[in-house]
Length: 363
Image 1 (cartoon, rainbow, N blue to C red):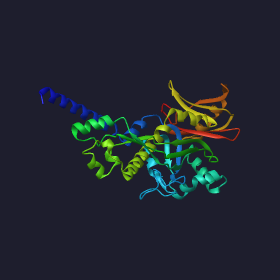
Image 2 (cartoon, helix red, strand yellow):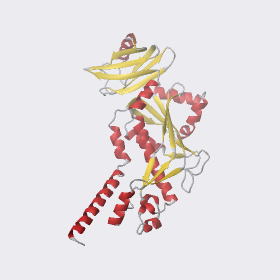
Image 3 (cartoon, rainbow, N blue to C red):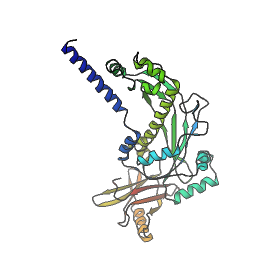
Image 4 (cartoon, rainbow, N blue to C red):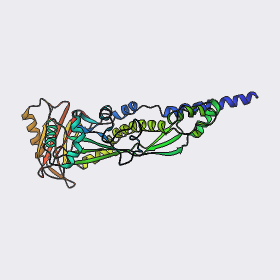
């Protein structure tokens, strides 16, 4: 081979190596890293109690992402660990305050009890949540399982082929796409009667797998003589890899969705009143906008003297104006309030809304 031929071959190998590295790097970002990035976004101005669980519901099929097989979930079991869901919400900084329900028996039956209505234990649970300073209940309702769909070889096969033919590898390039049809459902519930305020439905989306993730030892040996994208899939390996990726995707999607501006607006629009904290130009203003007359209000802050809180409420209720068809109330936050505080309002129609903030926060 001529000198120019060797140079050309080295250049091709360098290009293949660069393509392989870039493809691998794209898949190396961990869920923790991505959650850390999302944590930089402003939290929702709510103190939230999390309960329920991602209880596995097969829909009558045993060919799901989480069910079936030796290590599959059983009907009624938690397909996603409750602790993992809470940890993702915490690491992502989704709410101003987050607390997990520690009663496993209550968590497993809470959705059915809330939907059934008149239940003394549920009423007591909601009452204590209100007294403990929560604004909303986040109920993890279920994980509706679904099968894994195979979408075939994806557009990365040239990278796989280049690294295989020039470097003798290619098994680490995600070159085949799958998609789980499982879905995780959650809902926000108000704390008066447990009615649904908003709901969240999450799906994992397409998942790209490399040969090392989708085949067994025989498949890896076969890739020595044929390109990896021609090697067969091993059903057990695909199931494990897709299930693991689905779990990570759902947790990440949960944090991303809850911290989105769309979700923030939806949540505010579906409550009877919107409470905002708007510090600007040296002032710390609390603003309430409502479609109904606000008849009562409360400022909750640990250690705040009752006369100071009462004076704030009096100024807030006396400030009523009509703007754009909605009633607007606003008052300056007392200087004594430092750190986390809650503003709770009630309307003449008996509806209640509340939000939790941190003094000095931009939101």
